[in-house]
Each structure stands twice: as C-alpha cells, then as structure tokens.
Image (cartoon, rainbow, N blue to C red; front, top):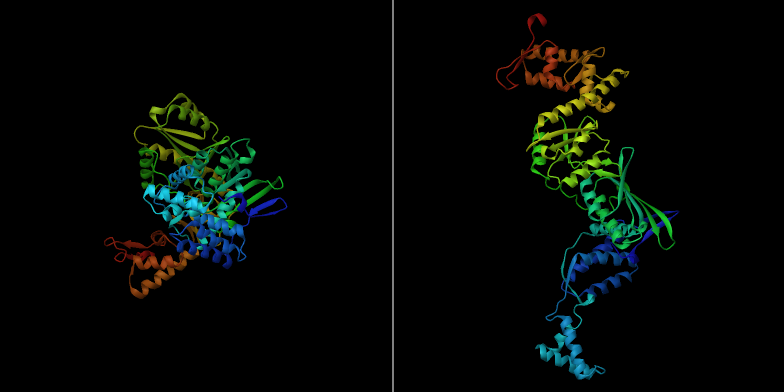
Length: 523
C-alpha cells in the first residue's frame, strides 16, 4: 500500500479507478533513473536518496508518482544505523553532561559537552557528532538493495495504488479462475467477513469493506488490501468494489478485470498447492491417477456453495462435463466434524465423501439420506473399486440423458469422417453417448468405426489407393497401409482394413513386417 496522500485516481460520473502508470517511455525512464540511483547509493544515507528524488520531482514529473516509486524502492532496501555507539545511549549521556556543565546556549558550551562525553566513551568528538542522530530516518544508511526491473516497479506501483483505494471500500466482490484454497485461507486469516453466491456459471465472493464496519476500520481495511494480491495472481479475475470517496462523501464504483488491467498490475506467483493434509489423501490421488480411468482428478477445485458459506473440497473428478467433488473425512476433531456436517446439509452439488470408519458419528450418518451426497467408508486407505462403481453409475445417469437428447436431435452429416470426440465437443455431450447412438443407428451412407463414422465413399477411395499400391508393389506392409489410410483422415487403420476385407499377417511385433493382403475370393 501507499500513503493516502500519494493516491492518484480518475473519478467521473460515479466511477473511480486508480490512475495507473502505463509502461510508456517516460514512466519507464523515471523508474529506471530511480532504480539506478538506489543501486549507485548503496552505502549512502537515505537523505542523499531523498535529495535525488526531490531533484527528479523538480524536473516536471508528478510528485506523487515519483514519491510512490521511491517508497516502494525503500521497501526493497535494507537501511541500518551505521554507528559505533548506540545513538539513544549517546543522547542520554549528552543530556546528562548538559545538566552538569550547563545547557549548550553557546557553541563553546556545546563543544565542551561533546568533548566530555567523547572522553568518557574513548571516542573522538567527530564520532560523537556523527552518531548523535544516526538512528533518525534520514541518517540511516542503505546497506543492501534488491533492484527490480523498471516494468516490475511500475506494476508494483499500480498494485499498491489499487490496495490504497480499497482501504476505503464499502464492499469488495471478486471472481477468479482458481487459487481458491489460498484465497479463502487469506480471507479467514485476515478475519474478513464474506458471503458467496453464483451468478450463472460464475462463482463470486463478496467481502464486507472496512467502511461498512463501526470499528477496527484501519486493521480491516489493511486486510482487504492484503487480499488483492491473492486474487490478481490468477490468470483470469474480476474485481468490483464500492468506494467511499471521503473528499465528497459519495459512493463510487471500481471495476477491474484481468483482460483490461492484468498486464498493468504486479502479478504475484501462485502458491504451489500445500502438501496433502494426510497420507490417505496423497495415496488416493496417486492410485486414482494411475488407473487412467478417463476421469480427470484436480486438487483444490473451486469452492462448493453451502448456504452463506463454502466448502473447499479436497478434489474434483471430471469427465465429459460431469463433475463430482471429493472430500476426504479423516483426522477431524468432533467439533470440526459437526460444523462440517451442518455445512453439508446445505450443499447442492454432487459430492463424494470418503469417510474414516472411526468418524461415522450420528450427525454424519444422517446425511446419507441426501441424494447429492454419497458416502464410502474406509479403514487405513480408500478402496478404489467402490469409488469407480459410484463414478460409473453417476456417469451412466448423465449418459442416458445425453443419449435421449442425441436420439431426438435431427442430424445430417456431410463430412467424410466424423470423429465422435469432436462431434461430442460441438454438441456438448460425451463421446461415449455419441458412439452409443450412432454405432446403433448408423447414419445412411456411413460405417461406424470404434472412434468415428466414416463415409462409404471415403472407404471406397481408401480401398482404391490400397489396391493400386498392391498392384504396383506386389505387396503392402501394415505401416504403409496405415500411412495411406491416415492421409485420408481415418485414424483407425486396423478397423478400416478389416471392414474392407483385408487380412493382416503379423510376423513379429513390428508393423513394418506385418503384411496386408486380400483373400482371392474377395479381390
């Protein structure tokens, strides 16, 4: 954050936004000159740097912009008190000496006091003079400095401007593409009050702002500002806020999103997912992914709405648009388990709960009647067989609806090759449902292959090219036939050859040694 005196904004017709420093040639030059000055003045007092900043302001640059950059660079440096003796102790001795020798109303009296203290401490008068106020801010010495690039400094400045503006927010709303575990951890750690809701497919979090509270405004406002980096760390995000502009006492709207402003703001690195909460979770994830079941396992998915609160599941399992959230219920205290049970009562999403047998309390067992919740109990480790049975059953329910939809859909194909997966993606259903419909009710003029529909005309063209090749060479290897078939857009060469009546004689495992031929009676 920056001091409010350095805040620069645009405000018009109820809208407000920080006046961001774009990476223009002038702004980059200011940033570069300041960075170079800090690098060059390592070992000098801070007042030397501030003199350079003042000179830069006098050349015509916006003073709030220059001072804001300088303040951020201060935070990247280490300033120390470069004194052989403690300035605080030294001042005490000088004041005590002044009581004995008389107040330093003249230069001569001042000199005698300094010399007396210097003699007592076995120091020179010059060291005493230099150390008297060595702990004041302007006298601190720049010991180390971590230099950013000019563009990084501008991005950091823009992020700090936004945080400063949010300090006076009445409310903050945000949506993001991920990183939910870290964001909710930050929200709770900062003690922020929030509620969640969905707007269509978008998941939103609304945080009450500091101005909406009657106390702890300063600390709460700082919490809102600290939340922002966790939000903008995502690849996609949207932020909306209502700002109380104290100079006119009006509420203004702030609207930011990653498409327009993402490149201007410093984007902190996304934190790597924390280690698994338990060995049970880690073993389940590892073993499930090794199955290659067609379900995609994702750690730390988006939260699940539970009334005015949320549950951040341990995993989600996704396949062809179907999503099942997974929560591993183990190593919980009884109090935490009961709170979780109350949340689960309000969950509407499909959720699979993997429960340690030792935690099968009455509150949790009562939830088994809710159709969207499915319980699998385990001892020591999660059994994968019942998990897969549940997932396949859930997928079959979805697939039945998709098959009904596809069966009623008037479709007329014109392509020579229709991939089940590509058609499923266009229509918004699973490839399995597409195959189930068209493998049974094969469209006129097509042949159903394992992965696609292929027109009879295309198969005839393929057959002609293979026969021509056989006449020219006298024989044809499977690898050569595969190249001919794939060049025509058909990926399953073996099925195409079988449908066309060809035999494949294998002489080992190499496709270069396998020979394609057609029986004489089918030639």
